[in-house]
Length: 323
Ligand code: CP
Image (cartoon, rainbow, N blue to C red; front, side):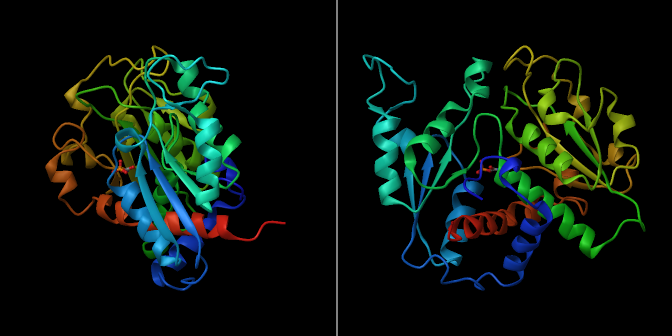
């Protein structure tokens, strides 16, 4: 693995999941792998889980982790090639990234999309420019279109549950990604990424359900069944992944915000006693009801806790000597 930006960087998903679960069983089994190495975590926007779980993961491997809130503490970065920098940006990424590459052995970056210009957001210019100029492995802590550490965690959490409670002999689990209401437009990253990982994993029947106008980019959903009928999607589901996203086609817009799309205990009765997942943070009683979040079907705390093991597995892969 050279970088960790999407599922395409992973040769064997199940092997990476197994590695993560081995770290969960014994967090310090590779505690000297990162001795005398440093990881830099650059944030262009807020985070709780990604920031802290990645630091803990690096420390479990013996690495020093340094966080830099670029948005609050750094110079405003320019990413456009050939930019005439007579506006608000102060430093070009082609000047900053090689310096960061000299300070750190691995560089991690979190950015968000503008949700204004789809072409710009889906070009993933920020993360691509860091890869181009840093000269060290780059980990996405969430980019404009994807959230790979979250999705790896989600597969780990599903696999962990299935290892402990096999559903049915020989059968694939049914996993449903359902759109949920929200008070403001959110990126498509988590939904894109979850779809990309579940379809690449290939060990589930995967259904995506959302109201009209919330179609995701086809390149991430190929292999999934897509329906506007939430009840039909939820029927016999083993896992329900709840997430809001804004429109991809009419980019960044919110259309329907129908509260009836919120998952409730009543809706859960249609499922096969499904386990419920969400990446967090969650708007309680808008996206997901208290009764679900506080009830026995919720996997959200276990899921968020597993972020450490996903990050630890990825960092450990990137620390392997490369030919
Ligand atoms: N799920 C997730 O990425 O959480 P944070 O935004 O708190 O990092």
